Length: 240
Image 1 (cartoon, helix red, strand yellow):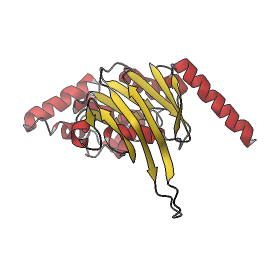
Image 2 (spheres, rainbow, N blue to C red; image 1 turned 90 degrees about the horizontal axis):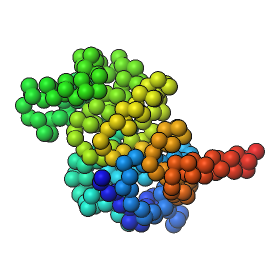
Image 3 (cartoon, one colour; image 1 turned 180 degrees about the vertical axis):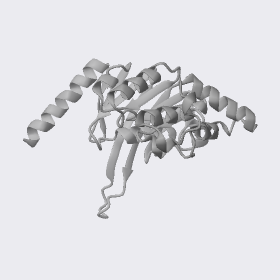
Image 4 (cartoon, rainbow, N blue to C red; image 1 turned 60 degrees about the vertical axis):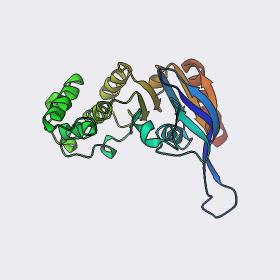
């Protein structure tokens, strides 16, 4: 299993009011992620997405560093992205080609220069996900669940060893939510995912709880989810 290491890695940005104090998006954190499935939970704006984006260079630490399998994300982002795929919550943010098969072909273009072989490989990837019947459909004509599965297929076609998924089930109904979860958990890749779905989080090997830009708990799903529930109850009591 790949090792993702945070070495006092954090992200702060200049305060918009011009004051000397920067706004902390994610406080410096040091940890190693070795488990096959790691879930990240927390309230909106807590820093979950920032934590995930640091893993493949969509965000870069202002302090410390993030290392993926020995490669520094900030210094060697191209090499890291060849190892780390990223799945967004809204599939339309990453489905860029008009047709389903064309989007999968685009992911294969760096490694398969021959158009005929690339198209066949794209069809093979779609077939492996039971999506071959959608090959010539417009991505805009698909359901939310179909779009997310196509986006996942396109991401996986590039062959990375690690998949980072930022709330991948947020826009899905229950049936497609379960389908996507089961699909993800059947993969060989190491997966780090953020979610508000506590049942989804409970399926992980390890769960991180993020609150106010800090990792406030790191442990088993049962313990971490209970910690998060207590945080939510406490915040609710204070606000009432």
